[in-house]
Image 1 (cartoon, rainbow, N blue to C red):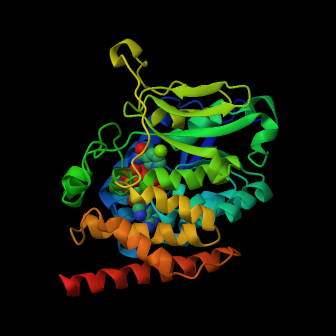
Image 2: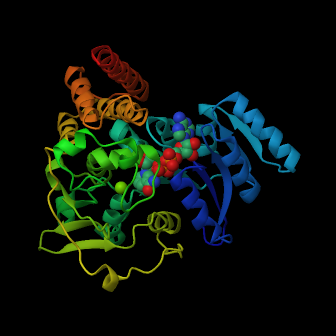
Length: 405
Ligand code: NAD
Ligand code: MG
């Protein structure tokens, strides 16, 4: 029983979009939550400001030089936060015995180790870092079960699905068979991103700035590009597979440009349950923090009269090959999703550096995936290796491209 006890929270990726929104919700409930640790990769100034405001016990940065710069600044400011450095420190603050809740909001494969550490240590994990499930879904879900952790999805779609699943009536566990719960399928909604109405010809020439301009959500650069290619929805299909024990055939993507319905679950009797709300991540974050209670999040009321209509259409597979590639990787199984993820991370970096065009993102991923050896997933070190090999293959693809140009 945690009633009355202040919950100590570690935020991995505190300076990011999800991290700062988590702190926003937490600061609305000071009687309920305390900030135990805040982490960032290299952003000394950003983490310094957060430490001044939230006075965490620990702060973590990746490099020794960044960590010592932060420690000096905090000392001058008279803040008692202990600064730690490096990847192992991320796992330490995610699994520390005094921590109750871990918000996993690092972007990309870098989030895997600390999320695993939190799972093994039996924490309440608020999982935003979808890449953890894409890379290591079976190992992560097993670690959650073995560690006695509570896993709450923060990705808005998965949070919506979780909210309309019948878990509330039953002991909470994700390993139940969907059909046994009367669930027929999951309808995963997608905004369609900024290029929903663009032609293939236009897609070949879109710029970085255009791709970074998402119509409905404010997010970090990597997930914003993923949303433009619809790889984000592909990663979310894989994420839903692991979270809800759903086959790829049970997960259907529906484009819904208003981003008001965050996803739906269809039951055997024909009922379709949906979760609606304004597109603001503080709703799923507050749900994860408060579960099973409902907390005030600061999100404004949904004004359906102002929105007026909700539209739906099928995703255009020819314009968004990344979505198809993700379904393929899920169906191949084993290390294929980890390879897809690694190749995508390199492709997005290259696009953001103006090294490749928009439609070369799926071309690169397709090439790396089709040339890779797929194995069964057996361990985290194996996945680290697979990830590194796929990144090398992706960089190789990029280097042949620059010769050809
Ligand atoms: P962001 O780029 O805004 O923030 C990323 C955070 O991770 C920063 O604090 C950064 O310092 C840290 N970080 C980056 N690389 C790191 C590394 N190598 N090691 C340690 N820390 C590192 O990203 P975001 O938009 O907040 O997204 C975070 C995660 O949440 C992603 O996995 C994303 O897919 C997921 N997510 C985000 C949203 C959203 O609305 N932003 C919605 C759903 C899911
Ligand atoms: Mg999402």
